[in-house]
Image (cartoon, rainbow, N blue to C red; front, side, top):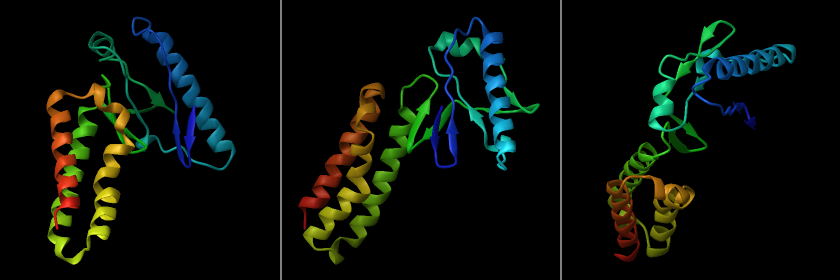
Length: 168
């Protein structure tokens, strides 16, 4: 279990060929957590609770009909979830994360380009690093898993950002 402020994340591992065990362990833990919340004057918001299965194509295929619930309320199954600013998908390819990051970087670059004449070189460098290149550095470890097309998109965005710094 990992806790970030008011966000709790649970991780279970298991064999998708034994879904009854996986479901029983997860729902037992959910019930225990729900009881703890209630006993401590807190409320578990089932409507915001999500789960994702991460694994091979075959493992994910085995979980198509597996559903989980808390207090007899179904939990939303997702194919991708955001965790501390990084998008995870069920096959750990990170294509969603990289696509969203490139979109955000390019949007920031368009905005910064419009403001270029109002910023001196030092302010432009600082702004590009803070609003654009930060995204690349923050999630640098995931590049090996995304598609070649998206890697090229990231490289293109980084080049544009660096050009934005260098050009007056």
